[in-house]
Image 1 (cartoon, one colour):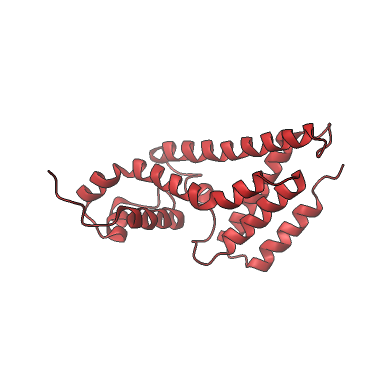
Image 2 (cartoon, rainbow, N blue to C red):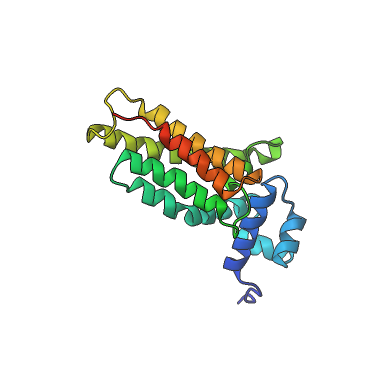
Length: 194
């Protein structure tokens, strides 16, 4: 029987998430991870696998932490409430001082060398899944008559995702909560009416 782990894997996963969130996938070295988590490389590998496997676990954890406002918005009764839930939810999430600035999905793996290609592919896939979830919700709103029949729901979901990502980039650049809310207010004024 192997020796029990001498560290809390859930706490270590949160620490790794925050490190990747601050430094990005490629900006986070194995040395950074072992120092931040206070464990050796063999312990890291035994608990989480390699860096890429750890990053995937981190993305799952990040999804769980951010999914509450996204799911609440997707469950909203109208398309406008969906948009408001997403946009103002993003403002609240990115204004929360307990979180590193910005969005792990956005700056965690957007650019980099070939070494980070799989991480970029995974974050792109997850961003695409969100866009598809929003598009499906807007299609349902269109069927219900809540969104105009001529509305391009794919483009409208892209618009919402672009606003969400823009809010994340602004937060990472130091925008204050009131600035983020002003951006959200403008985005909601631009929301199409029937």
